[in-house]
Length: 366
Ligand SMILES: Cc1ncc(COP(=O)(O)O)c(C=O)c1O
Image 1: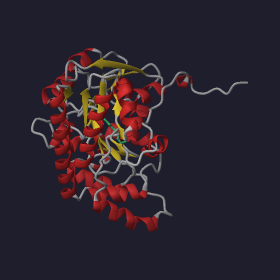
Image 2: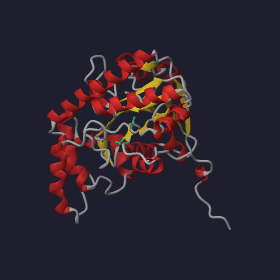
Image 3: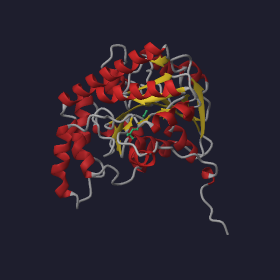
């Protein structure tokens, strides 16, 4: 007799990670490989975080705190919120799953832009909920269509800002529109995983947390992966009403944020100097990429994040393959149905030069 799994897993498409750099290196016999495919911070973690994690090594025989008391205390102080307003997880991704698990029943609906971060859809699908995807309107989220798509079954609207994979943001007016036109029993999540890169730019509404004062259905997601270079240790958090946070915390795994992650994240929060330097290096890398695109006459979304989304006017599968053979890994747009676009993560000056050099070689050969 066949083993029976959850029916939602029939035909399920799990998240597809790009091939690890080591595997590509072996496969093509390359001496140099630059992975610019996962929006990782290429500059190494905060030195303060590294030191704190080293100090914590001797305590790894003990379980971590289930609710990271000190980390949440620090975050609460920084954001002017109560500790009860936080849900911390094993990366922002875990918090997305936890909210989905807390909120979604079979037959419910979520609304998100297309293209956007696929974990919203994947977690909803797993839970038997339907995903309504709203195409962008030019280079913006179509918040009017998102609000109009709300039905009695809608539980969550995911507004990714800056949006992955495009790097564009929702303006203050657009966030206002969504909040004003959506019933308050629908949770609106502002996914700000790339917050610090955007906050450094003038027109990003960087005060989203202040909206929690007046609205109990808003949640703001942040991550330590990008700004603090801690993708490998996994910490992310959501700030929201005590009611939503309590429900997320009911379903989370008991010891989901490990001791190293808690120690590292706490220390990273005190490393303003590191954060400032990352934001500056990122801006320089984006400028190098966007200047290059301009010389090609390519369309791109001016980026508020640590990656850029560009139309190279070539089949993204072909381009991906050709770049990979030369040691550059990017994220091809066909994953999102944007077949001639690619997403390129920022990096060091040298990495940006390498990408441009290899791209020029590939274009000359195609
Ligand atoms: C838009 C967005 N949200 C959330 C995440 C989750 O980040 P993490 O799980 O590394 O904290 C990512 C990661 O790439 C992302 O792009």
